[in-house]
Length: 142
Image (cartoon, rainbow, N blue to C red; front, top):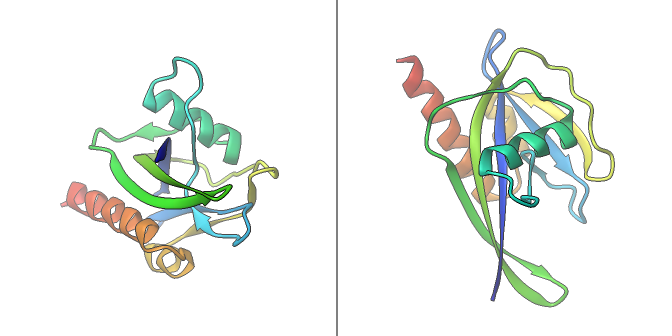
């Protein structure tokens, strides 16, 4: 069985309230998720995640929190073959809500509260990632 590894960032703006940046992916289902992608060359995990955030949503000034990565895994069917997708996410704060989407990969975006994001995310694994991120952030504020 083939596996794929991606890295991304749960992008958070804490203007008046915690708002999570979620993106609607260009795929057959138009599913919602987080900016992420495959590494290139000798990139580190963080370099990959930051590059993908910049490419997909045009954000480069992200303050990455020093927390453990949030892991997500699930199976996809690619050309009749089952592939195990492993995604690891950093959490990062931004001061801006300005987004420029990469139209080849992203249909739309939304700055959403936890509840709004939870309602838009179709897959349980992504809901778990969001919940873990929220719990980490709440624990940091305590």
